[in-house]
Image (tube, rainbow, N blue to C red; front, side, top):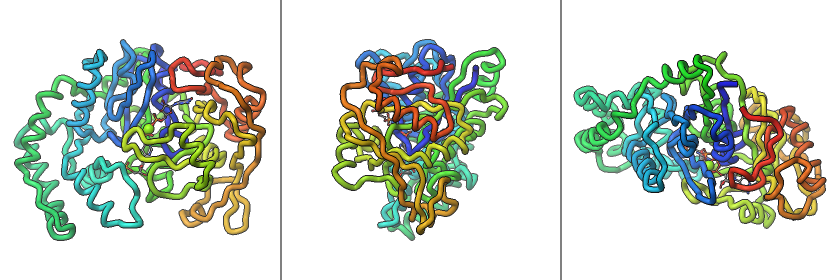
Length: 427
Ligand code: GDP
Ligand code: IMO
Ligand code: MG
């Protein structure tokens, strides 16, 4: 089973880092294929907590080669800081490979991200402010600067000039900000060139050769299905394609290469930033989930919006990703409720619908139709077999599995690597 994609099935922060780490020694390569340092993947190994933003989670596994694919947008300063912070904790990052085709996030992208959010006012997306959207916009507008450009100072200057020409007009005339100097950006980027040179590779070639040789490659999605620019709750999305198909584009492999697609899904739902969220709880129940689940952002520290599990979202994620497995996380967090609601369908303008509504307007109007499950007490964190779980928790998990139409491969009962009930071997 050599090529596995791990993808968020909700609005992010499902526990993708933990699910990736779970595969541990079984993977030879761990590839990030989209997003940038908007991601925050938390992994707990031997009591040590690591929060990764740009580095693939596989960096924590000795022997695994972490790869940053062409589809990622890289803030080189953040990447180097992250590498240093890990090195200071004794983690070897020397195996890292970075695609020469990955685009760079420049300080002007961060500026434009923040300024345009401010100008959107109450319509803002609630971005992470990391320059992600503007960097992808430049990529698609053919104004981007790629990692490979760092090694040709003449080309690099031309590209920065091209990128700043329009942006400075916009910053000065529309946003009333200071123009950004080409020289300042050039000097900063040239400073990164030497630091990154030894890591840069033709990562598509490396990955395809690894697959040819029967090695196991894991493609680690950031963000999630409902934040996908095409299939998520547009415009309240990120600016890349986190869904499984994005792994092909963002890593340079063909779709026929992928053997397994694992969706990671929380036993309830969270969302950071603005946008529709049918099962959101704005009362003390939402606050209880937030506190008991520790639902505060890994990247921005923002409070995550919390709500009940949404089976419509799960089915939709199964469809657009072609999920072969689901990994359920944080079942332990749901202990102590008398009953646990699950959204099984929506009511939209008086009509029940079982699938994701087709239009943004309908989704904004969607009201959850709930089915109620008996709660359970006790601490689940010691469970290692399905039969260790309380009966009601078993019923709940099996019901979610049935509603999604996808077999569960594992259930998380705590943040640590070993706090998992494995149901189907991965890979
Ligand atoms: P990611 O962005 O999808 O990797 O998820 P985050 O790391 O942003 O958020 C998930 C949080 O839940 C992290 O703090 C994890 O350590 C934690 N976590 C993951 N799985 C479990 C689980 O099964 N139970 C509990 N209690 N925490 C978990
Ligand atoms: P991981 O990988 C949760 C959200 C932001 C905002 C929207 C657009 O940890 O699951 P962006 O900065 O990407 O332009 O913001 O997407 N967002 C995330 N929410 N988890 C993430 O990553 C996210 N990355 C971006 O909050 O609503
Ligand atoms: Mg996260």
